[in-house]
Length: 221
Image 1 (tube, rainbow, N blue to C red):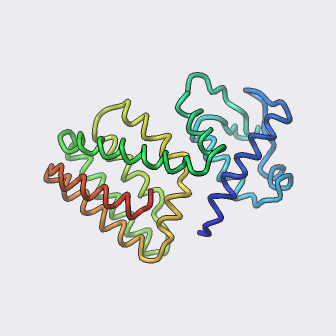
Image 2 (image 1 turned 180 degrees about the vertical axis):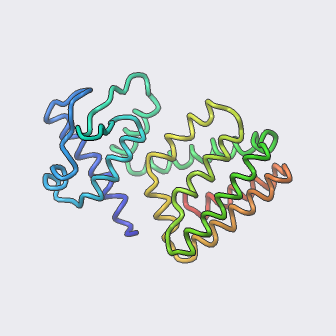
């Protein structure tokens, strides 16, 4: 993936935010379609779709089959609002998001070393095998990568921690694809995942944390 892609995707969210303000749209109002926005913003429909997906994951918009895309009421989701303001207003603040993600994920891993179930260990190993299969067919295992890390956080069995982690990562799976697109990175990432699972299986907290921190650093998250 081009290094420009994440910038295009974020720029579309910024422009969409401006359209909402200019058109005085509010909760419940219908947004312009992908085709309309693509023409209006002079960008590809795939980029518009990626922006919509991010906003939908943040529960800021919803798509109704056969009706279109609508603005959702944000309500009390203050964390989502804070994260979105970071994305829209300050590119350098994305590094703060990455740092916060690392803090949450490492602490979740520490708890997971004590609380992870046999079923979750099996799930992690299955995701590694799926990643190998995807990459063997030339596809980047983006979803498998995301689910691997999510499973680790789920394994800490702390719902609040999981709810903190999800919006930190799910808003931008583009960054996962960008990381995996680097030469040699998919194979290295899978090997790093295997090291994490090996340490988790033995409930070796120090080794697991060391393996995860190395992985996040190499992934540039």
